[in-house]
Image (cartoon, rainbow, N blue to C red; front, top):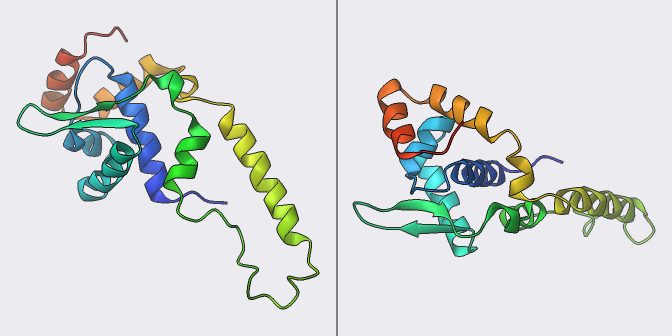
Amino acid sequence: MQLTRHTDYALRVLIYLATHPDRLCSIHEVASVYRISQNHLMKVVNHLSHSGLVEALRGRSGGIRLAKLPVEINVGAVVRSTEARLDLLDCDACLISPVCVLQSVLDEAMAAFFRVLDAYTLEDVLKSRGEMLKLFARSLSSAQAEEVFAMDDTPN
């Protein structure tokens, strides 16, 4: 199974925002750090906002931040909400589907996959927060990094 880019970016946004809990971040900043499309990221943030995971504030001094604590954001729930299609196969049009057990095997595998994801929260993913912050800083230009990390007074 491969997750979509939408899910990948959603998880990245949540991780970035969780590492900067005391300030608003911009979509431009997140896109710059990860070197991903700002336009695509805007769609992802819009989805996360409608899902109640991210709070988006408009205007000159606006930005985005987590709408919940990291411990309240379940990784499995994020993946379920961002993946449009979770069926591994399309068995509806298959000739042998009435007698085939493959679909039940794949359903069992998918259930196991989500049992693992459901056991983790965003907080669990942040165990190396300090190292993440250092990598984020290196990813930005020196001017951007000074601006971003001057606002983030959380120790590395």
